[in-house]
Image (cartoon, rainbow over all chains, first blue to last red; front, side):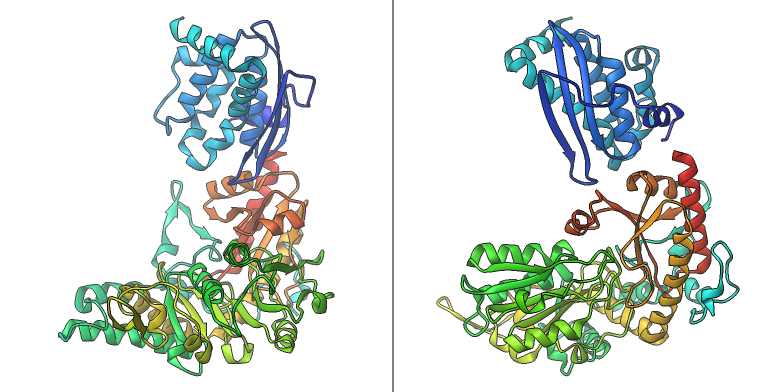
Length: 155
Length: 428
């Protein structure tokens, strides 16, 4: 479960700290008390920044770091695709072994495949990703959000 | 003399220890391995204890030989099942030194026992009735099961909910006892032994003040009944609640002990079969206590199993179990306080303290501590332990909790201390 990649992100998080953004959300995992405050900033259709502050276990903290590394600089459509793939992996109960295609999409985030076998920890890994999705919807408004989802599905 | 043992140096013998080698043979589960052959080190008995063979055999033989519904039917099995169920009540009554067996009500767990009392007091007539002009007193170290029922009662009746705070060293702060418990107080409900801090609370001081103002006293003994002699008469409480599965019994069985005149005076909570005397389409009269509070088919096998658990514990002796756990607690406090960055949340001395140790380990989140310990076969509890206000009080999101019982050994304490050193290295 504790891959070196996860421990590296935990010990040396990417993009940690709150910076200016278009929207801010605060998410909590009530079962263990993990918390994250996350801000997103968009420039046109591009994820310009994801900044965050939080407390929690290594899985939730490392996952936020990986999210920052993966999503910043991406088009919204592509970012949503990455989010959906990560969600699919985390909900797989350990049944998905990431193939090359998935590794290309998820990069460091494939290290979380092992976490999906531990139902109690899946929420830790998803905390920042759910916060990001929520903050993005808030920043762009529902219409833009729907349009981006549509674009991704037809792509 | 045990105080001379240095951290990291396992003592040859701790004073007061039970013969755990013999005891552990009674608990088949303690022999199992986890994670590819690692020996199980079970340090989560405060959440639920393991079960001795004697209890498992009793359950099996009950179902194989004697099962039928109780208190109805005239056939052999119905009579045997009833006799076994009521014998369990006798055993529990003796175990807590109840003046009468009719004061022992079987419930499904301690939560139900506490909810039962809270509901009775909401429906009761004077002088017990809790209403908008009255106060309910609890403490900041309660399990959610002794907070939420009282919050519900306060919301429904308009009563005021008050509580005792905690000192920095994990004890109840009773310095303002006369302001907290007043002549408006109708009921004081508190935990005898904290499930997070391990603190054993000073019953006498609280009961004395409650009696001065004529308030009822409810004691949550869920973490006491498994670990020390429990004497409801000595406690001078009005109600005492505990659960079976933490004291070597099955899940699904709890106990509410209540003073006889209260059980007679107070109204029933759940209505149904078994709890009635006579029923017409217009009204009913109720069976005498305890049956008045046991609507429907009760957890028969579970009660019988609890009876076997009580026999098992009494056979060893509750005072000897308490002495064993005290020795383990002293040793564990010493070993754990030598782990760098480890902070005990709760009393740091074994005086007036149970064998439940909560702690934080530097900045490492308890979920990570628990997971890495689990990989070594060590089972602990992590989180807020259904007592979130305690974590809020001490400004921490969660703790790791190790809890010991009659089958716990000094070697398991050593394994925990070494396991925690490994956790530190892992996340360093």
